[in-house]
Length: 545
Image (cartoon, rainbow, N blue to C red; front, side):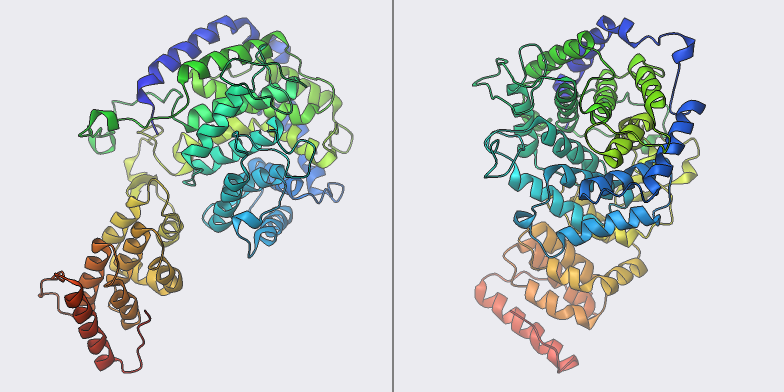
């Protein structure tokens, strides 16, 4: 999604708003100049991490365990750290043998689990991530927000607090190729726009406006405003309504972006139901609220609020194309955390010491900013329109149709991770990768993942079936013949043609031109002839219908 027609207007509006709050961002003197690398901050983080690693941090809630694992990963702990592996195992057990409609994990834990798994290993846990994302979609309320299940007193309303974790996890997942549907993203953005208070704030349970005229909300407070505003900025980025990094002109020609003009001009950009003018007005109102009500230590859910505040500012900086090294809000928040940290390294407001310590640590780490920087650089492995390209171009290679940093990661794992997501916008890259991948790698892929490929050959998506048949058809292995013969009857002509080409390769009749049957009778005859061939070379073979 690009939304290119509104990107420049968006950036101009955000920059104009930035001038109005410049004084708010000026650090309060040299003594307050703190960053995540400051010695005082590093010392506080070390104490917090030590607490989270200890037996004192014993919150068994799934979301709390994911939070602890996330902090440890962001702090630099190895993936085999006992608390990281314990969190991952708990999530895997919680979703094992379940469909998306069966997931009953609370919405907070669902989002935190997705964020944690995406950070840990999106390839290894791709099935769990997909399942958890789908569970979000099936639990989304008709009005677009997320909230309590049936039977709760607030079952009919959307919950700003819960919704923020659905939106954040959708963004984190999108950075590594997992997608929440555009319909879900548009609906939640519209719900946020319709539940903003006239003051620019957000309440706890959204009171939905009949149109986009702000209506009075109850429970407007700092934590909810930061949650709602952060979610709006994230939705803007996911829907392509935010600004984009400037294109570099000093790149080698092979790495420059190629713009392909659509045959129909109306197809040159992806449309969205979200009006960017209404969105900009809502963001401006919310920015004013947070500026005029600035408080780094509001009563109540203090540490939960700090994590939401850091997220809000990180995505606002992204939208406005600027980054303040030592902003006032971070300096005051860091000073407050250092001053109030307990002897054992913990913090505790209302979420409990484990969760609150994790929230405080994520604030000090500038967790959201780190995620954004990783997504916008080569640290994430994928080049974004040339942004972050290293000076030494011999340090990169092309994988699955993209320029990535060279690594030791098995490319077959990357391909299978994509093949399991036929609904993904980049799925077509998998088809090209199968053609371009060296034969020995395709042989390894089909040997290791034959069962999964056989399952994909029966998938409801024609693209998934085509990819599976193409992969199996490239290798001369008689075990693949039954799958290819069955695919000759595929309702999609391209899948059937791919199966035909694979069988000719398998039978070493590569000089024979594949001929498409003219009618159903000819197709049945073709399938019968290939079955007879297979039984002649392998009498015990079976071809399932």
